[in-house]
Length: 142
Image (cartoon, rainbow, N blue to C red; front, side):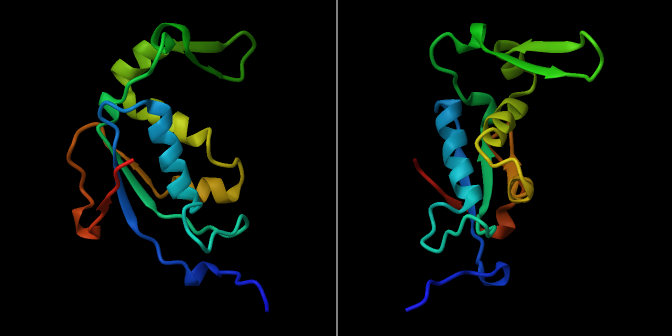
């Protein structure tokens, strides 16, 4: 008996909608990363891109638990000496809530070609309406 190994052409991709309103940012990001990666499927193979499309709505209504709004920072370096930029998550959630969700999901996806390909299937929306109704996405409760 041989092991079934799916090819890229044999993967059927579904569309899922996750509602982040009132839910923790990390739990929503973890569920989105699992769907993007394809780990919920029985044919999951680590070296094959078998994930689905994910639409996360209401990114601006996601919550951070504890004192993360005041204590957590988003840091990045510009490449110049002494140019480490810091932004508090309170500011980030007010100004760019979709970026905060994207950073959380990106941190849970592998840093290789499969991860970069998986992130192209992610759609983030700040409001409750999205423009992918033609794909008939399935609303996923978690």
